Amino acid sequence: MRSRITPETRIDFTPICTSGLSLAPVPLLSCESNLTMTHAQPELAPMERFALQGALKTNRLLDEMWQSFAIRIGGLDLNEHRLDGIDNHFGEVGQRLAGIDGHLDVTGQRLDETDQQLDNVSLALEGMDEWIDDMQTRIAIDNRIAHARTLNSCITQDRAELTSIPLEDGQIPDANQVPATFGQLRMMS
Image 1 (cartoon, one colour):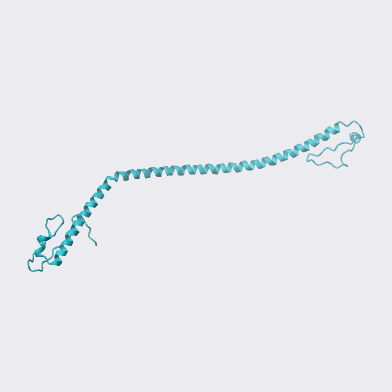
Image 2 (cartoon, rainbow, N blue to C red):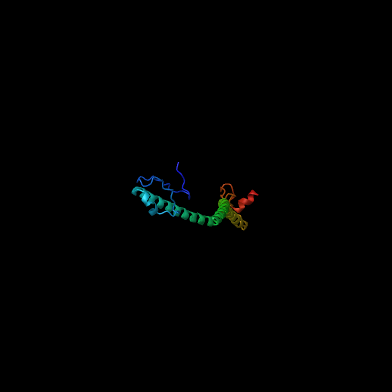
């Protein structure tokens, strides 16, 4: 398990002096202490002095790191209200996107309904075209019937040929079924 570094963390450097001058351990040093290397120098061996310098430098760097970290954390605390504002904006954007999605769904439904109505209109137009064609055919047959009747109504002589009146489907009847002249028509009645 790793230990956590805190602002109180210091390098514990308590070497035992081997130079014979002193057997007292050197106290824990921190960068706030006013101890200098010259004060502890006569009691320490060269390797111990080097380790002491490293401990002092490490403690100084730890203090600088914590001060820098505190400044950054303080800056984050100052920006916390901005994060809340950003969160609010994200909420508003989410609501707007949901509203847009709702509008898109409604628009999609309306487009589907419009497509269905256009299909119905297309079918109705096709039916209308057929009806118009049938009507034109019927009018043409009626015109031929009216024309034949008009011609036949003008005949006054018995030997004059009658114009065959078309049937309802537009077909001309067999010549054997209808009289050929006005005189033959009179004899039938």
